[in-house]
Length: 357
Image 1 (tube, helix red, strand yellow):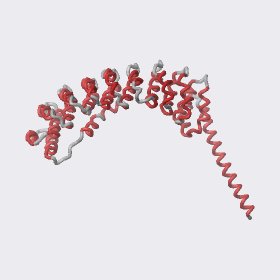
Image 2: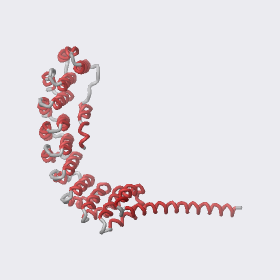
Image 3: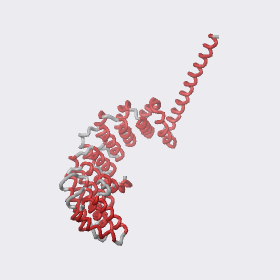
Image 4: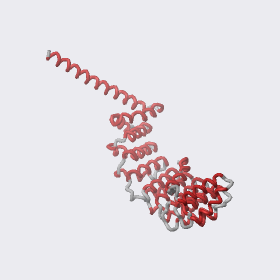
């Protein structure tokens, strides 16, 4: 009986082992089949999408494709898969492809290093910043943003002069992330860049660096051709903690663009600026409703009993919006409703720029 049980158990274990082996063979078959599809233009896209889902199991099958000197498309496809798998142990293999004769391969090698690279690839990636292909330069810059030392800001400053707008834009973003104060004068040269997406990032980055040197280039952007960039410039002037900030906001409040003027007045109020009351009372009867409402709101942010009396007649105004904002401002002065922080309000004003990203 014992012998029979032992035989049965052995049979079960053997069957289980065969089942595992069979499953592994099926998986290997699927991987091999997908790898073979990388030689077919129509099947390559599907292979690039599915192979990374198998994780590091695909590496022994994909890695040899980097040595296919006759097929640049296959080398590039292999790099896409390696980058998406995210196997950092292959950094040296990928870095070697940065000098490939084909631009697409160099681009995909740089892209893969943006996922798996380390500081040891920095020198090779720097060379690609002078590559003739803009896609290669762009992906090299993205990789460098991940692996280069934060102190190496010259990499990104030099890329600000690139003729490809994607490269310029990403260089500005990278400088904003590391808050490179020494880059302000270089970034300022892009305040009139031909590409609005670049100018958006210029305004955002200057608002991240937040030194007094950022105020002047941001003030130039108040005259930007795009309305949402003008608003963004005002918002980012307001976050600079400097005694000169209010001066620039007062100038913005006198803009011929009512959206800019209204935003600047609002920011003066939220900052509790000593200039807020003077500007707000000047524009409380402005012909443009946005400016008028901003002025009424700013009085509520900084006003006192005297200013409350200025607002009270507006409770009988013809405009329902004027009555509503005046009532809210009076409540603020009386302390019956909580105020709104500048940070929260500025967040609302910058949402409109997301569409250009």
